[in-house]
Length: 350
Image (cartoon, rainbow, N blue to C red; front, side):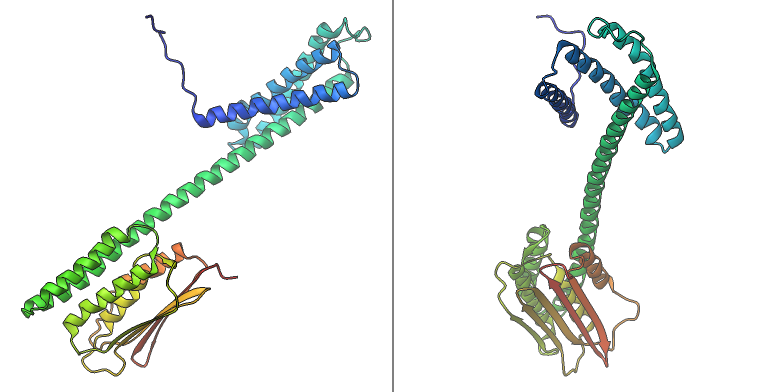
């Protein structure tokens, strides 16, 4: 079997779609003209030939402007040169078309004695100018839509990359603090060390496998918080009072993973003191329009100035990207007590 000495070009799907759209557009244009002539009873061989001839000239103007003038001049913001080239093209077409029409239609229309006339040249230029406007409008609109779609896709990819980076910051930061807690138990040779390791494995399973999606079931996030609190209690004993209460129906509620955990971890990191009256209090309220998570804790006198802050900064960035105009974060320090409240709305705020 013989083979071709060359391979046929493969037209991309988007390009084929564009070609098909152009073909359909011109067919609709031809059908409309034929129907218009037929409805007026003036569809003759002369008129049909005139339609075909005019269509070929209009297509030449349309695609010369589409593929040559717009990319080379208009797209590069060379407006004056573009206008000059358009006028030159229309003038050339207006000078070429009359003798061609005279040759084609002299037998159909005996009154066409002279190929050139001022009115005919002006008519051809005006008609060509309309085709240029249509071609430019479609080209510019198509480019705008494609650029907007491309920009949205790039923005989406950028957002995904930024969220992945922020999430990668959460996990090591969270793991670092938790390992310090287990190290403290192991250093004391506590018999509860294996139980602490088990709690850590549950936390890591959540972070590695269950929090890979953009959102998780709220109940899973709450269970993860309880596991974290249990792990902290193994180390703290009765040193700090810890309360975590929930209110409202959590079924069907979705939330970004590790969102609430950041505030919990911050409360434990900076709110541990040997003697306190408040300890650490956490409360989750789920309403139809929003969910609210709040923490209240004493501020440790051993808190290092200028140390930490990664978790809260990370939280603010994630909230701005995941819940734009749908969240409120309040952080306040007052008389040795730290108040943090996060409210996430089901719908954007008006």
